[in-house]
Length: 154
Image (cartoon, rainbow, N blue to C red; front, side, top):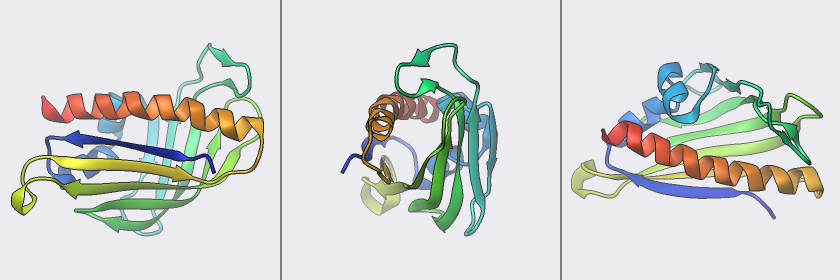
């Protein structure tokens, strides 16, 4: 089944990386989020919004919109899990439900040094829109993790 599986090693502790997934200013800096309502706790909202692009994808329409879900697990040193996630595109019907997870694994001794960041997203209905969605976000997440790495390692 199509899904998203991307990872990167970032020279920062898990707690610092996790904060970057929840603080609106950090989300803007590395993920280009325009607005965010994110609460790092169980049953907290995880909603991020991007400006609508002028570019129009042949299958998905304009990009941007809102990604929203509910935080079901949160561990300050290991990551978080968002359930009931949907992408609400500027044009067309929502895509979802999906599960979104960020796992953080220290690679250095005693939790110091670098951390492996693994981002997964799963949920699928057979169709062209779902397949194209995963193609587009795969490229987007690769760029986003590169930006997150640059932000946290400077």
